[in-house]
Length: 356
Ligand code: UDP
Image 1 (cartoon, rainbow, N blue to C red):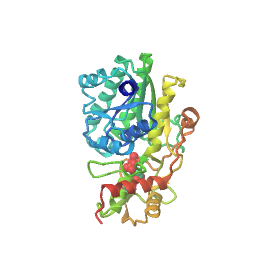
Image 2: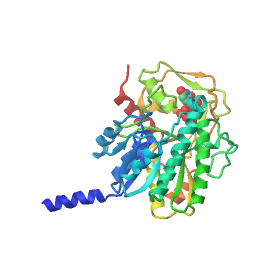
Image 3: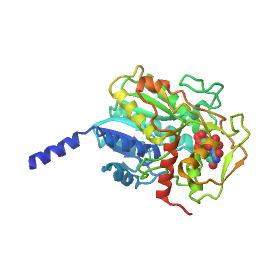
Image 4: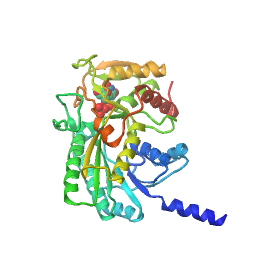
């Protein structure tokens, strides 16, 4: 018996590791769930928790039965970051989610965004190289495209320039990574450009947890339905779209999480054609703000108190993805639609609490 037990422990210790930065955040924690449920790798997280909660690890454990270690370290601190990498000699890949990500805040505090997002990316690249970790996945964003002339956008659509300092950190982050892979041959990179990740884990046990007042559409919708926000605003009703409101490509966070596993496997199996590749992650379907509100009401039976307000500065009119390349190369496509996005987001909100 003892021997078998010992073997089990040894096997567990032999499990290769994926280091997830931002593992207590929204997309990081959902990806950790999918990695754990897949069962091939152990998750290690680095998250300073300035914009997330340490107890996310417990929520993940409630879903998967397994927890993971979060190192509460600021990635801008190279020595502290190195100290985490030094503790593990069997990390096979890094998924770099951690970043400041609020568009509006980035306009007010551009230097904080540049300092944090650039320095942390540089330090992650340094550590991957120093500690011989050959595979890096980078969280990028469709915001790098700006206002485009032709829809849907594919990876080859030229960017019209970033509309905010946040978007600029992703645009330049991608450029940094391109130069990085040219400068060395140890680490290869896939950048994933997310469209609008929304929704929660289908169990309703994990989801987006905005620390401040939410600014993204779906948390605003669920908090309005919950009576926390008395009335929500639809920013702009006079755009040149089918109902006058902006159009986005909303994608379920669980689909996004799965894409990271596919991208990592793709690199681990050396299927990549170039040392740096980039993929759009979207459903391919554009949904207007009004349509999103209607979908929420239809799925949940909740009435939303909303009004059409002025346009929000910095919003692009319409954007949705051509995700053919992710299907053809990574073998990934979305499985969940707007109904699952809204139903799961509402389940999570009810778990967090409703006022009425
Ligand atoms: N939006 C809105 N009211 C809100 C929050 C967002 O009408 O309270 C709109 C916003 O103008 C945009 C869409 O919802 O057209 C998606 O916004 P979000 O901030 O979620 O994501 P973004 O596309 O800006 O990254």
